[in-house]
Image 1 (cartoon, one colour):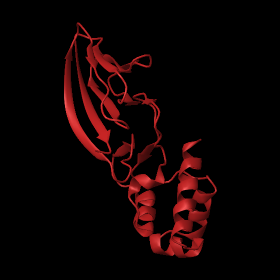
Image 2 (cartoon, rainbow, N blue to C red; image 1 turned 60 degrees about the vertical axis):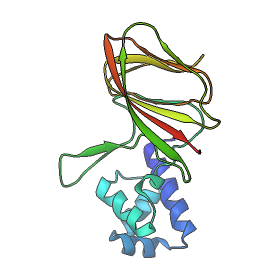
Image 3 (cartoon, rainbow, N blue to C red; image 1 turned 180 degrees about the horizontal axis):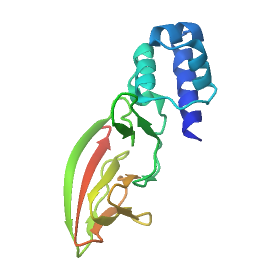
Length: 182
């Protein structure tokens, strides 16, 4: 699904959930009805400010406008992902993953040295790991599904199966988020 289609679908879904008309949501968000209509049609290139205004008007977290969650692996390379830019400053962001309701996330900085791979036993059922490479390169992920990832890459994978971490460069630093329901 194209980014514009993803956003269009989310706006329409969330607007219908709360029972707002196109006109009512546009007014509440401080947007013109034609702008909102274009966005729901999958046209246009909304700024962070526009999407933030919509999320606020819909009383939902910003990330709800990006339905990306799945239980399978996902890799986002450094130059990939839906980038949103600000209209008012040199700022841009790429949402890598949103946190589903009733989920716990623990944040880790992982430092790896080249050599033997670190093999990990399965975590509790439903555990998912999110890895963002801050520096270097590494091979990590579930057995039979490990990926080579480089600086700036993001990789989400199931961690309720055997998995591993291995530095491919001399050193690698990874931001690791462990997500679980327990």
